[in-house]
Length: 171
Image (tube, rainbow, N blue to C red):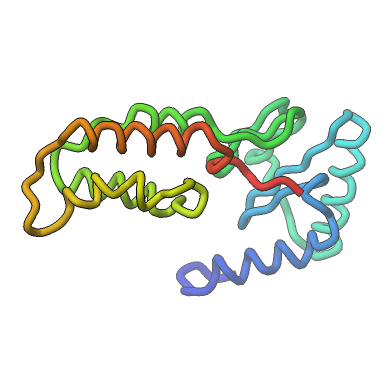
């Protein structure tokens, strides 16, 4: 596929999804050119490898051996850690939220609220919890960080890092 086409990534993703259709997430995960092949046992993993390789061969697709890593116990992939225990959030992603510094400017606060708003449907009473912070972003408001703002900031960070918001959905 020629590089530079505006729809090339979407077209390639569709190709990969079509080629591997029917192999559940218990056998493999695919995103563009990355394929993660999983298995609970060594034998199951080998069987899943065979299935994926057969599909790729039937579609006349090639792999680059230098880019492949086989029989990994744990793989970090798209912000998640995939292992025998299942799929969990990459600790680095959680750490980034936990270590988020207290906003010093309206710009900093809007960045934090942007992250939180993305996950708002998973945070109970989000608008009530975030109200003190949203008030600071109003045009007529002076940026005066209060105890109420600190409580709101801490509550949102806690909600984002303790609930299954940043985890991968299970089948």
